[in-house]
Image (cartoon, rainbow, N blue to C red):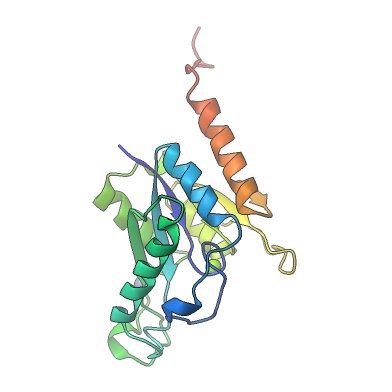
Amino acid sequence: MNRAIFIDKDGTLIVDVPYNVDPELITLSLGAGEALRRFKDAGYLLVVVSNQSGVAKGMFDEAALQPVRQRLNKLLAEYGVQLDGFYYCPHWPHGTVERYAIACECRKPKAGMLLAAARDLNIDLSRSWMIGDILADTEAGKRADCRTVLIEKPYDPVIHLTDQNRPDFIVRSWHEATRVILARRAAQSRPFMSSTAG
Ligand SMILES: [Mg+2]
Ligand SMILES: [Zn+2]
């Protein structure tokens, strides 16, 4: 089975421009390209999981998200990597576009996108990670049985931590996120010693 890094898009993989779907305005967050290169080298699939309530709000349609995906892959190509999956939730219960105005199972903090990706890409969720910038991301990761990293904004420190959303690690940069995840990966690849044996 595969291991994956699930990645929030807005404010995590890319600089957040609220409800933007113009490819020209998309730029990678500092250190994200290098980080994804290192995760790929370590054998992880790279899967974006993004809430896109702008669809339900009538601000853009689903088709507008394909150029976004292409732009991400173009930017990541400079680091020699491509996304293995791109999942989005177009829903929002209070939206104005009727068929998207539902309480779905995919909008984070629910785990639907991660579970769908796990089925599609044969991912072992217990050996995978979710990286995001808000607690809805880490809650979705925890619900999917992944480990979680929150990249905290200096101007937006995390509060309201609960048992449901508490990240395994809170870091301040992609560089630091890479370090904690790959350190755990290295530890796991050592021979397993059962603590219950004997
Ligand atoms: Mg975000
Ligand atoms: Zn949804």
